[in-house]
Image 1: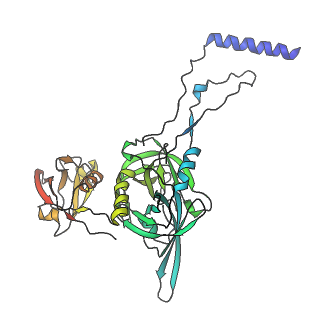
Image 2: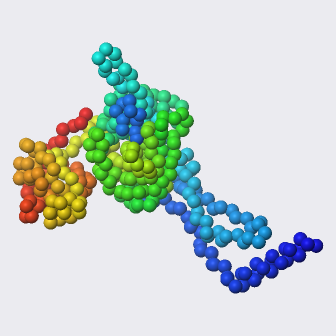
Image 3: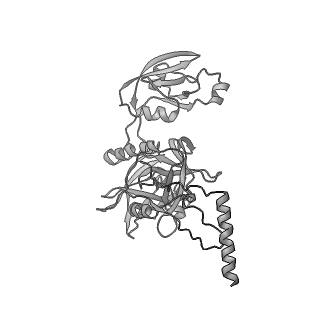
Length: 384
C-alpha cells in the first residue's frame, strides 16, 4: 500500500502548487511560413515549388512529480526534407578540367562546382569562376547521368555563366523575388560541397544581411545576400532558396578568414543576366566610364563631404562618357535622372536599366557645389 499512498501525496502536492500559482494560458501554435520569396577547388581559378512541413513535438507527462510544459512553449520547427526533394532533381554537380602550361610539361588540373537547371532543354547556370579556365566540363545529374557541357555565355561582372548539355525534359528550378527578403528569413543552400560523392549538401541558415558589396580577385560583386548557411568549396553556382523552394540567390563566395559568412548573388540581379546569356550569349550593358566607392560616414568625415550617401568617383576612363561630361575624380554622384544613388549597388542596378546611346542626367557634388550634367551612355565591351 506504500506506492498508492505516495501517489496520493504527490497528487495533493501538485494541487496545492497549482492553486498558489495558476498555470499560464497556452498561446496558439506558431508555424513557419516561407517568404515570398565557393567555390571550385583551386585548380580552375577558384574562388520548384515546395511548402515547408511543420513538426510539432509530442510531449509525455509520464514523469512522476513533473507537469508537462504547455505545447505552446515548443515553437514549430520547419522540416526542409520536402523542399530538398523538390529542388534536388534540378541541381547538378560540375567537374572541370583545365590545362596549366609549364615550361616543359602541361599539367591537367581538376575542379568542382555546382549548377542548377534553368531550362528543361539543358541550360544550366553556374558561376563564371567555376568554368573560367575549363578545357572540359562534365555535368553529373542526380539521376546518375553524365553529360559533356559547352559554355553558352558568361559574365565576369556578376560572376555568372550559362552552360548547355544535350538533354531534354529536365526538371528546373523556380526563381523567387529576392527583393522581398528580409534579414532573419530562413534560407537553404544546396551544392556540391567539397566535391563529395552522393547527393548535394544541404545547409540551413538565415539571411544575415542584404545589399553587401564583396571584393574578389575578379572585381567587386554588388547587391549580395549574406547568409550564415554553411557554404563550402564546391558550392559555387548552387542555389540559395527560400522555404517555398524558390531560388532567391546563387552561392558564389565565402570569406576564408571568417566563420558563418557566405554570399549569394541575388535573384533580382541574376535573373535578367541569365536570360540575356541564354538568348544572346552576351550581356549588353551601357558604359558610363567611371569607377566609384560608397560614401560612408567615415569617408564623409575624412574627406569633409557635405553628404552621407552617394558615390565617390575614384577613377575615370580618360575618353569615357563621364569624363567628357565634366565629371572628375573626387566628385560625389547623388542622383541619376532624379533617382537617388546612395551606394554602388543602387547606382549600377539603375545604370544597367538604361539603353546604350541613352542620355541620362547625373547630379553630382564637386567642391561642395551641386551640379547636373548630361551623359550619353556608350556600350560596354563584352567580357567574353
